[in-house]
Image 1 (cartoon, rainbow, N blue to C red):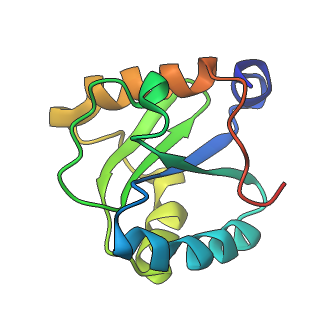
Image 2: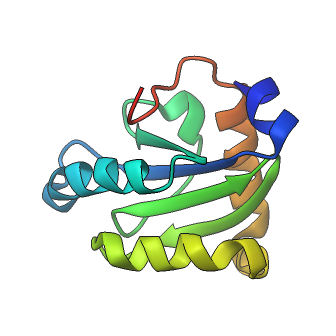
Length: 126
């Protein structure tokens, strides 16, 4: 996975969720639909409890949370309103926007690196 993403500086959009979270369950289908609107980006759904090997010690207080990376650079990590319009606007603004919020930049970068090393993540639309 790392080779494909970093080679082309591909965008990676990861929804960090939990199976017990009702909001996450409701958000999954709209998230998948959003993936179809952004075919140039790779979308991944990650249950942080099922994939502790990837999520690590990440402490998510609000679900759903989103990680956006471009190549090996984390661009955003944080909660988003479970409305695809909010995420769509954010994704449209990121190519010209600043990097991840400074307080979470290291945490976001570490999570992105673990995701890039994982070779068994399932794309939302593939």
